[in-house]
Image (cartoon, rainbow over all chains, first blue to last red; front, side, top):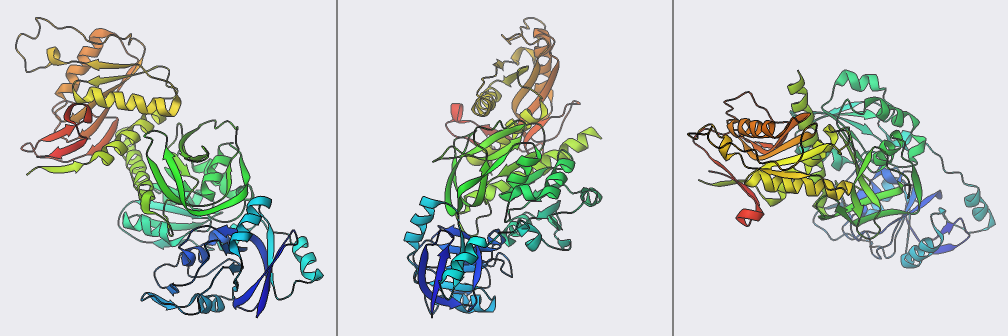
Length: 360
Length: 171
């Protein structure tokens, strides 16, 4: 069956339907990694978006039980180049097509994804729809689409929940958490409590954690007024590690502004350099926002910059135990260079505990 | 049996973390002086100063300190005690850097040597390894790694500048 990807500027990409047979609308996101479609499709960073994979072939290894970043999906559609009707991998439980049908996510295949990428690179972020027809009505509909601002409240946990272990007490503020972040903390024996994004800071105080992690997630950081307020209230009291969307939230809480990228970055091969040592790491990134260029960093100290753009993608607070990165050190999918960022978080908590003991 | 307890990467990361903690604990760096205890502490002090320069773009004053004459296990020490710091340190915040903190006697000697050279506002202590067994009431402010040891064991910190490689060995 034919299906169409319609962009808000009127451009139409024709392809073949797979997955669920429904029409859908949303912001278009481009994922440039060659691998990792299962992690990306189950990543809440794409909430409300239609996700297009620019690597030309997807789905070969099916869907397996180990690579879910969430057990449900929050994206609106999937666009791929060449699809694969079967799966040929020992690890697979089902095909990508079967998974999308089960999750009620429409898919579009046999699209020239390279052309799509060039088009977006030239014209910037766009709204899009997946439709069975591309008549005038469909074009009007996509033009009129208003993208909501409440993506985080759609996917953040509604209730606090524990992920018990025997080590440090860590609170995770869930802005659209990936499972691998919890996995990395569990590996380091953290006793985790995951809290909704708008938890009052008094509850965090009651839990008296050794540290707070603020996760990555979808949508606009400016919309997270409550989370920004929480950061203002708790920073300095607990060591904080912030990832992705959390990075922008912590920047805003410290009066450093952020701006929308002309093209959102969803990649698994970003080269970032640690300023202090010159060491380069390759990391994954899902980021639609960057620190405003030419803006004064105030109390924040730039720690990591991108190798090919000199953009500040990591900072620490000059006086408080806070550090943040505008990429995904947990990978999933992506290279494993970033594991040490979680070790750094453990050490940040260790230092705070040691200081606290000395001061008693 | 010798066992490597920190490799080059772990040493780099520990020094990096100590650097961030020094910045965090000292509001404004203009009053800071880094003092390294010879031999290996002096190189670690240089590296911390280099790291701060990378982040802040400004080079802090660094001094090497030879505490030989201040040691409490040397005879006739009253004969020729000379302080070794060539920088004005009165009113400064000093970060004293050494490789291993053990009994605390080296640090006591360093404190005396510093005090004979001036009157700093504050002295804090950064060590790469704290192995315990203090014999004096001295504690570090910045620690790379705490390694519980017995008296029979020895800890050797190797630095590239002297030993041609970076590592810490427990023997």
